[in-house]
Amino acid sequence: IGGEGGNGGGDETNVLTLREFCKKLQFARLPLDGALRYFLSLFKLPGEAQQIDRIMQAFADRWAEANGGSASASSVENGDSSAAAGETQVLGAETAYVLAFSLIMLNTDLHSPKVEAKMSKEQFVRNNRGIGPNGTDVPRETLEELYDAILSEEIKIEQREYIRGTAREGWLLKQGGRVKTWKKRWIILSGSVLYYFESPKELKPKGMLPLEDVIVRRSQDRPFSFTISCALDEGGLLKTAKTGSDGAMHQGKHTQLVLAAESQKERELWVNALNENIITMRFCQLDGRESKVPPRGQSVRSVITEERSHPSSASLGYSARSNITDERSHLSAASRHR
Image 1 (cartoon, helix red, strand yellow):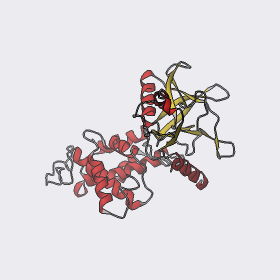
Image 2 (cartoon, helix red, strand yellow):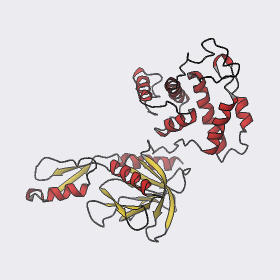
Image 3 (cartoon, one colour):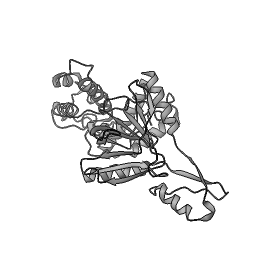
Image 4 (cartoon, helix red, strand yellow):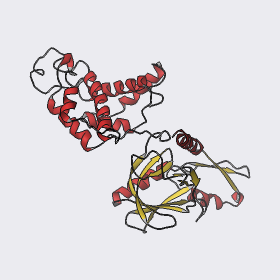
């Protein structure tokens, strides 16, 4: 969406794609900051101002429509001056558009370590005067609530070039490889690759694991723990990569990755997300039999066991239909760029 929906200098197909995408989003009864958080979690914003503008306008239109505040819906726009006199007014699409941009700038100001003099609540209210319909003010209470929401919880805007949409992210405990200590890591599951970072703000991962030929199991190593290991060869090496002391990515030597969540519910959410993103393998029979693709959710191991039950399938070859090479090239390019 970030690369296509806002692309093309107004190309009709791309604009229609963006609009249809936004129509699928359920923003009803969501406050503006909550809807914006969800919206920006679905893709990476492009870098071009014109593209960002088009995307944010589509967001504002959809949010206003879902909340009864289309461009002509507010009482002031319909000629009713009671809203201007202080009654609650519905935020129209244009007001939502301006406020969404204002919230993104506020988010950067409040949470970027590079900004020393943080914007105060009074400054934020003053900066957004007159942005309502016909130059009216958005109720001060609304602006103060938005400021407090952004101050208490940062809107996470993805800046890592190799992350192309997140299936799941959050804190997990990770067990070390050689030294079996547990460390807190920020985990991102994106594009059938698991990345782990020291913190959510880190741009470069400590390591990564393509979810190719792997199996996920619940574990007893620690409460709410689970493991990721090789599905084709018990005890085989995973296709991991780690960031070395030289800053470059090096092949890892993990036979399994052991992670732990904070609760049973959290573990199940991670296990399910991982299983849904394991790369589907296509097994090509060397004896000429038709290839077979495991159904989503079925482990590679179960398919291998089934295939080996047939004498004619003693030899198996396989090729992965994946974007791992593409993911690694993006990560490498991002590292060189920095």
